[in-house]
Length: 382
Ligand SMILES: Cc1cc2nc3c(=O)[nH]c(=O)nc-3n(C[C@H](O)[C@H](O)[C@H](O)COP(=O)(O)OP(=O)(O)OC[C@H]3O[C@@H](n4cnc5c(N)ncnc54)[C@H](O)[C@@H]3O)c2cc1C
Image (cartoon, rainbow, N blue to C red; front, side, top):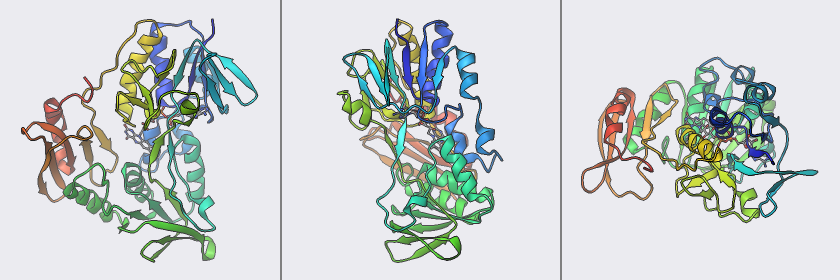
């Protein structure tokens, strides 16, 4: 019997193994990962300074420890080259591995804007623990950081790096913080909270180029002609589900790798979950949906085919300078924001035409309303 093969040792891959081993202690499992295989919680990467944790502190278990604890064969530093779905094997650089069932927990790639300049190669993005180790080494002893992007990851890093004593400049072309997640008044509250920590915003222009300047500084050139000098530049523009390997193997993909509610892809015995997956139209790159997916998939892999359901899935954004909880309405929902604002406390309710609550954004003191509002919201995917 060939093993269950899981590609990815992020939270999706790891939690699938953890849940599966509660049901089945013996079936052989091989986990493959291109990174160093250390187990860590990715959301902590944008709270490292606030919690005073280095990359090594954030490692919860070495691959050897995971292997022993869960009776799995963890192979780190292995870049899977492709999938031969017809013959049920994954293609390794110089070899192949047969599987009985394959789980794709491939995550998402950082998307870097098409920048010019001779220092583009020095722009950091932080999407895993190894990236974080390199970034921490680069900012060590430095004072100033330019962040490209004011979404969840950019705003969290702006808060965290400010807490770490860095002077932060943040560039966001869409003109406000968290533009895709929050209505305007809530964005403004987050912006004020971060500005009070000293974050300098450059709302409107795009970053065009990053050059080497004097004294080891980097110069970020914006589309309005302004130039920002800093020691380090961090790109937090966005993430895209890793679909290319699945697509090349002939699996159906859209924004993510397409699955049904049992997390099965269009190919027999291949499943996908986490940031790489599009589960019945839902691309939800957050921890709560991947935990629900891991629990359902573990049952399916153990022989009891189970559909995942997503309840209400609030996202807490780690900007302690202005706390934020957001529950976005389902894509394409029609309705209007109803906003009450008092300083940095904003309660924004997204209501459908019939008055029903479809989503919310809460900042400051209003985050306390979360539990009450969650009871009113429809499940994301019943
Ligand atoms: C800075 C930051 C803060 C965040 N904060 C929050 C938060 O507060 N709350 C929240 O809900 N979510 C948060 N998120 C999102 C959350 O962390 C992700 O949704 C989650 O970690 C994704 O897990 P994953 O296992 O799907 O992917 P990943 O953790 O990206 O794992 C992907 C795995 O696939 C492997 N892989 C990929 N391609 C190959 C290949 N070809 N060969 C071999 N291995 C391969 C990689 O090596 C890796 O092991 C945050 C994300 C970031 C970046």
